[in-house]
Image (tube, rainbow, N blue to C red; front, top):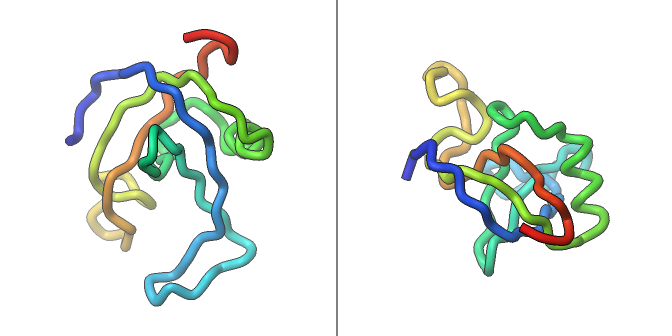
Length: 104
């Protein structure tokens, strides 16, 4: 699933409390996801030029955005080259651009 193909999609940014491996909620830490159709993708911020604050701002407006993204699978919390850091693993996206909010 790792590819550098950038696709244009419509999605909504969602901010959720982070959880530990045992399921315990961490109330002062948030993760950002993008809902594309009915699927949630973790937003990996390491490789994105879009700031965390900008993404949080969009999550608060709950609007559909036109995005340029690439889809991947791998470490969420560290670079894929960093094998020493413990990380969550799974599907994620990198947001390369937020397009005009009114049209693709």
